[in-house]
Amino acid sequence: MTFPTRRLRRLRTSAKMRELIQETTLNPSNLICPVFVQEELKARIKVESMPEIEKLPLDDVNDEVGTISDLNIPAIMLFGIPTKKDDAGTSAFEENGIVQKGISQIRSNFGDKIVIIADVCLCQYTTAGHCGIVHGDKIDNDLSIDTLSKIAVSQAKAGVDIVSPSAMMDGQVAAIRKALDDEGFTNVSIMSHSAKHYSSFYSPFRDAAECAPKFGDRKTYQVPFTNAREAMREVETDIHEGVDIVMIKPALAYLDLIAETRRRFNVPVAAYSVSGEYALVKGAAKQGWINEKDITAEILYSIKRAGADMIVTYFAKSAAEFLQES
Image 1 (tube, rainbow, N blue to C red):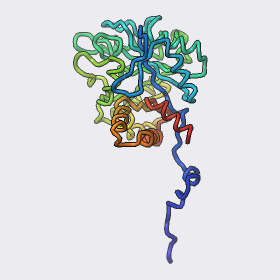
Image 2 (cartoon, helix red, strand yellow; image 1 turned 45 degrees about the horizontal axis):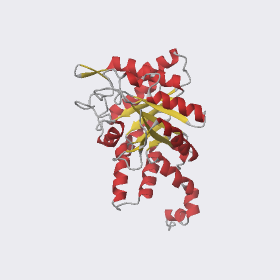
Image 3 (spheres, rainbow, N blue to C red; image 1 turned 135 degrees about the vertical axis):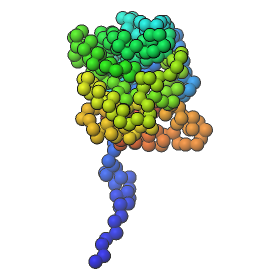
Image 4 (cartoon, one colour; image 1 turned 180 degrees about the horizontal axis):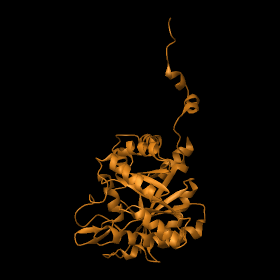
């Protein structure tokens, strides 16, 4: 008996046929756009290592968020660059801190038209440039989570929707959740950078946010990129501590961990396609070696295919434009 030839390409014969059977979809509502706001800045500053990304003065934030919202991107992630740094990172939780001012301004202007997510970390705010408080030559985990909790509460008072701890301190989610609840902010969500890996892909961000460590490195608190099981333990720990959304960071070189998180846990999964991923594409496109739009689409679809529900990406605006055109 002769069996019919299996021809999978029958389902690829036209654009509409391919659209009909497309398994992975991506649209602007899956994207989160990072925004940098810098204290006492008078005009926008280009980030040289991240073409088309700018550090904004506070006066320009509403215009930028308006552009993002008009592209049907539902959320921003706000990063602050302060004028004042000290050993305790006090400007990170001041009532009139740069991020707090940014949150308040966006909330007053946009209401609920955009989801405001704010980074909760200390690297931009401390003289040491580490994600936690330095005591001697080590990062003091417990002192750090007390400070991270203060930052989260200050952002909640300003009107944030989601706080996003990225410091990778043990117990940070539980401490922040308790602090928010104790202050009555039970509806403020937590999106933790649950498995944030020690990675060379962060270099352009450190230029943009002026947050490179002044000594040593971050290997003592970020996840080794060699350890998948350890990454899953970090995710599981955050879930047990009450996180609302978990995140894998970076994204492109960690698609296996995004997929494993999606397989193991029934929680919303975010992926952060970080600055180095963006810079590599931009650099190659500038040389004419790749088609930027096609590569960007392939990267973002692959992250979504791996299991991410939402993607933090510096390509958010350009991707939203071509996704709405197609």
